[in-house]
Length: 633
Image 1 (tube, rainbow, N blue to C red):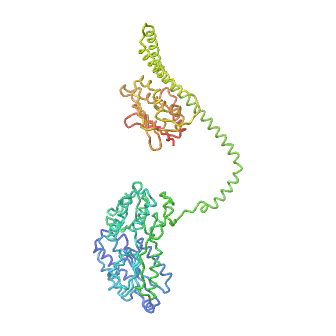
Image 2 (cartoon, helix red, strand yellow):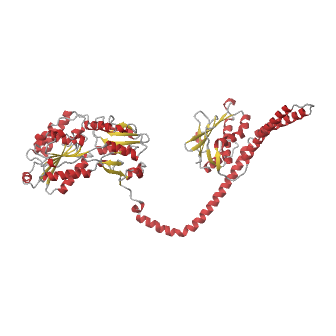
Image 3 (cartoon, helix red, strand yellow):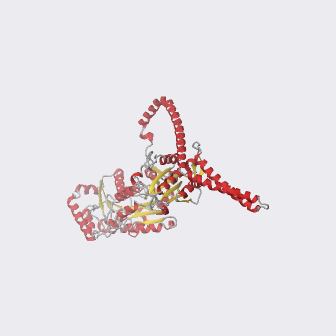
């Protein structure tokens, strides 16, 4: 007799389960009308065929319930006789510790002793074993059809000439190789299976069959977890993981589950695709692959049943176990998990395709075409507007270049004194060395070797002064926006050379830590130097009020994926939390004499290079500005 999932739990004692079965059996025996005498008489005359369907897990427990429903419908459609179909469910397979079968046996015996069924259809291995075990008492001469029984679970020792087996064959290796074919980057597969005796049997079978894959993937077993814990793990699986749905009737905590409800719960939270080999789960939650089909099993079962009811000997009917049918896949799941159809095995069927845009919106598309024809007259005006916009973009870029140039002049003016000082040093050294050389040459026997050393010093100081002037000219040069390949480390190093003297004059420790690799980006070198220069000057201004031993500005470059980063940090007071979102706004400034355009121009230049800039407070104190630019391909 079928019990509801609410009444069944793994913690139910065997005697309580037996008592529940007996009570329900008596209740049904009292409530159901007795077998009508005319039905019995019609059965004896061959006009009515009585069929008993015996379920293993329950009338609504997938996948077996779908097989039973299809078998029943097909049998009613094809039968040339009127049928009296009765259905009962054991449910014992859904207990960790099932109770005795005696109450259920007595119930069936009392129900059918006056009119035995003409045939018994056992759905699943537990029902088949039950019918074999109590055949002598319940159905001594009634033919039995063992349907949807995996061939390893067929009790062949107790098969009689009155038995027909419609078995299936589970090939777990094929099912898992399918996962690796459609998802070749898979590193691990989590196997969801319950803790009932039947499920423990299949757990060991799966482990045994999948030994050839030990070196290819990691198998994670969920059989020792409560289903709530399985859901939590499935929601946080690492990348390149798949889920394999076996069976869930009783979890490790002893809680009974309806398999399809449990699978839908798993599908709702899982961050990885779910695979299975049973068609009843396909189209709802699983990706697909090779699987057992309901139609083939139903066809064989119904064919055998009609043959036996028509007088055929059960021993004359024999079938080979049914293997997996051609792979089938759910188009919706393929799209959800980004699985390319090119990876599917040849001959695969793809179902549940979403209708294309024409099929879904035919009339809307026709209307759009009509509107498009009307709009054709506006194309010339739109092209004219596009041309004007392009001119405006060119003009805007020119204005940006001019504004950036003015900003560079403003920035350079802040360290002209230091630049002059840096030029005075090599020029003074050149003058001193030249005068010394003149004195040496005026002697009667000048030391030519020492003169050569003086000339080498003059050449070195001249190069030093030229380099300062070159850097200054490059930053002040007024040129249009020019995109070229730039080595970012060298650009940063050159910019630091401009401000090094300023930092020394302010007693600021300016450090640079470049990444140990070339960072090539596309952009305008002058404008990128301006960005770095502005940020370094701001950082030096931020630490100007700090103690002399705490004035530090650090510049570093790193590579983060396909982006190059420039990070500028200081040991100043940092940025107020309320100002972080506004620091790049035009005319926003915290300096008494500032105009608030420096950082706005910096952001505009960075975005013109398809990059981004962010401001934050450093964990160790001070501000952190991060520039991210795409690496040149």
